[in-house]
Length: 160
Image 1 (spheres, one colour):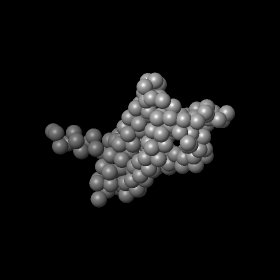
Image 2 (image 1 turned 180 degrees about the vertical axis):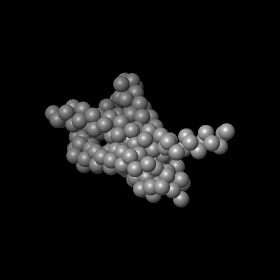
Image 3 (image 1 turned 30 degrees about the vertical axis):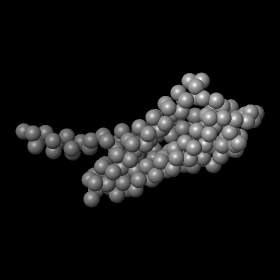
Image 4 (image 1 turned 90 degrees about the vertical axis):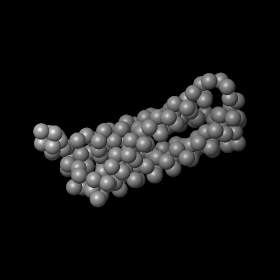
């Protein structure tokens, strides 16, 4: 059970890193390409970002549960580092959604209207928080994937 839980936590944390990078890359390209009107860009943001947060919450929660259940498969330091990184990332994402994204979404509803005076400040704060969130989950994913020293010993003994 512990090995399965570890596999699930590794998969969930790594999946979130990949999904977030893809989301950001396509979002930046969409905005900077000049191919879309402000109205269309606003509509796409209002459609995409709720899914971004749902996916992030879901995958990070699965990674936290998996890490909790993988107690026997992880070293104490690995588990602690992963749990702290994932927990802080989940708190940051919650803060970003409630304090930053929700007001930003209000500023672009209805789509196409001029940006309010605080838009750029909130947008930069959201970008910083999302970068920190991504880095924390990447550290957790790397920590979860890092082999324990006993895995090297078992691997060497099995291979002769």
